[in-house]
Amino acid sequence: MSDQQHDLKAISREWAAARVIFIIGFILALGAGGYYAWQARQSVVSQRQQTLAEVKAVQAQENQAEEADQAGQQLCRTALASAKNFGIIPPYGQLAAYEPKKSDVTGRYVCAAATGETKYVIAADLVCRDFKNAKCVILFSITDAEGAVLYQRHG
Image 1: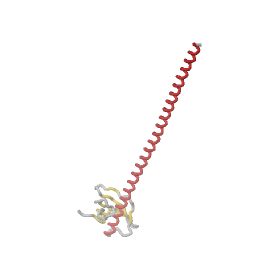
Image 2: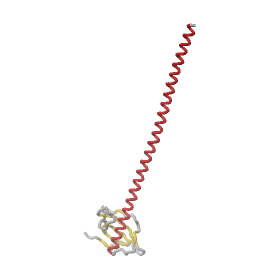
Image 3: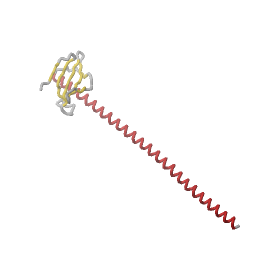
Image 4: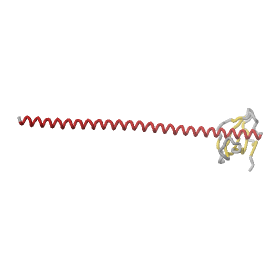
């Protein structure tokens, strides 16, 4: 019987070792699965943050472009108002295009205006950043559709 008891004890130790190895393997498998799940979640969170940052950057660019468009429109409106005040363009004259075009001279912009009868090209110098202030937008020249100079600033 001594051999049988010895064999039972040996089998009992082997089963205990097998259970310990199984439990350790199970814990390692759970840990690995948890780590991969956590990594996947971090990846999704990172992608969402990146997408949000890209959306904010696009919105900021759109806002800047919109502000630039509004500034350009205001520059042309102020230049047209000055031309009307000088009596060069009739009071019923309107902007033909709301976007100014840059000229070869730094700070000089060209706007298009029109009445029912003729078209005008207004060149104005921007001397400060307050587009609504008539002192910041100074007329340089006004020409009609045929290219005749109606007004030219001297100096």
